[in-house]
Image 1 (cartoon, rainbow, N blue to C red):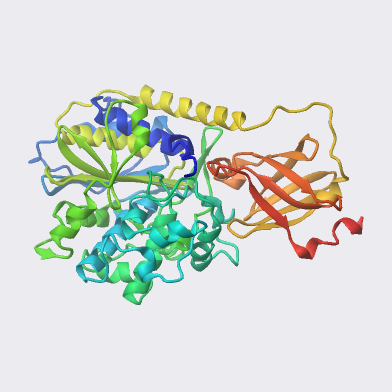
Image 2: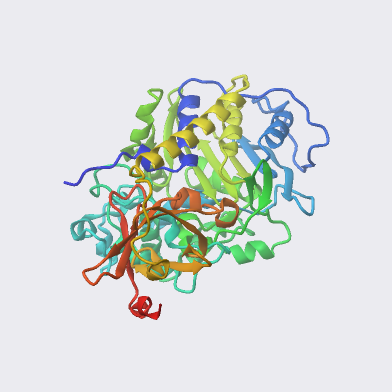
Length: 550
């Protein structure tokens, strides 16, 4: 059996913070709010508090304004359900900073990985239709399904995929580019077919590893069993009966809507516009765009165990399956405060003996979180248009504290410290993966010899070019200079503003060039953490004569 990688170290900075914060909060730490008014900071749009609710949201607006001001968040939309009634549904700040357009309760945001509970619910509908069972093997329905590990492909079940037990880790940069749209060959079919080339980072069915791959597989399975696209099936069987009329699975459609949020990243303390993420490529993983008004329909449906306004859309038994713990989330052991479980589509936790379900979402330019407690008949959703900061979770904690009847306390400093320590730990881990630099060395070949197009069947093309007297790298539209490190090893550099999440997926790793017996470079390799060994890109045959052209 292969060595199982530490799940905690395989997560992104934002995932570290999301887990840390949630573990601390539900482990007994109260949440925060402080009555600090920021008059004139931003518009507040449509939505009234329900005076009959026992939850106290009287100073909640002041709290949100403080979050937006101190954490430089352009805008946020929030909805809260308490005792099965909508307590709050409104927007704060701006959906478009440049045009000063306000966020409303109808503003469309990408919900990113909160799409996963929708995909799980779509599978539950097929369970009701008697077209699948949770423990069916994927290959029972997808005969051509293949993975790098043939034994894993033969045994992997639908339940395994939805509970993040595939043995595959995150591999985000396989399917998008800097301009916000995939390259011509990066299609949903490409993303699915090339799973066979991804080496596992754990043995399948043995441990929890958060990964998008399982939901990509289930999306394809839903299409096979339903005879229609994942988008059409979800629209017909979920969006329509839930009256989620503007919710969609298209970035293009969202951008054409008059009321949609623009994506932002923080650059030197200022929110800066960035391109939209091409979520269509991995629609079952994170392709849904919605607003808080319509998300409350989905959350009321979840709280109602598949029933909305007297109509049973999914059976209670199937909805119960979604909230059954499947595997322990081991990273919570680091906090010794609580235990988290992965269900089918939802992450599950106990608070005061009551089961809560929640899921976060994160795309370049957006973060989000949604959760609910069936016993209390309460729920919440927070959608923001700022990347890479735990602001959605910060507001989630405050909301949940109020729903539990706790008086929120100020925990802003805790979040700042968590963000800082997670970033520092992340950088420290990156440095530990690097060999000690050997000083006073030179490349073994003229720089022109390194130039060429290299490819990997799972990750696509990696191009090396010469820009003046310096090498340049390019991968799925991301680009940056290559600085000499030692011998035939070069250091990737990239502009976070231009390359977006390049720091999270490539993380300025070292590129090593490999020469064959002929003396020419026929491949390069670089770490793709948490994959246990470097990923190798082979020189394309079309570049065979590149070195001879000197």
